[in-house]
Length: 321
Image (tube, rainbow, N blue to C red; front, side):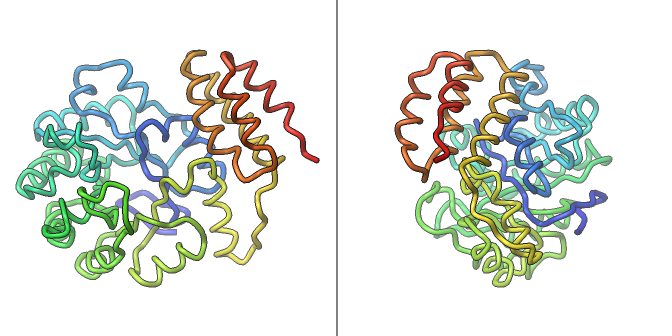
């Protein structure tokens, strides 16, 4: 248990914000399975201040998901700060996180996401504007180590961010140019932790308890953020916690997987249109249904389904024998 600002967080395992993934249903399931803190998908500051309904839908959450952070991105201090004010007044999340980590070209070409790593003055201006506009909430940052291997700036940026009032930093140990390839370099996380006194959350290549233990011991980070390893595996949080607390580890059985699939589908159906629910069900179930006998056959049947009822029918036909 530790704090980010005034937020008490029960355990040091965080669900990373992921575009097209960390919506209300998936966040809810990950919280139920042990995630200590969850984040929304990253949302456009410009879309927020224009009150774009699709953008605002990405922010909406329930108390069951708390503690929760809303992650925002943008390239202009006034716009990002105005969006933070809107979020605070309208949604009251536990914290607001600024995205300086997204490496996707359509975001960085506009100067947002990890493009800020190329100009720490812009990063400072945006962050300071948000902190000043929402003094009621802890403001945190998620960033990458640098634009490329020749411009590693994470430690320098971390010191600057702490000085202006950021309450925690999540560092993904890759550069922008790496995208999601190669290995995350935990040395950058270690260096940052040694340079600042605010909580540092390590991110990158943590897929199980052994990885969790290694990154905590090597970097001394305060918490660990898990992203892609949670896809189809929301139990990763509980499994790591159980191992950490010597409760024991049990391999996920098919019955648990199917029950979680049904819970996920129900949450999608309750919160989204039929078409969106079908598409998202297909995406998530393709991750859930792997490593089991005849998984490929069931996944193909799901991909051919056109309605939620058809998908549920396939799920109900899964053989537990």
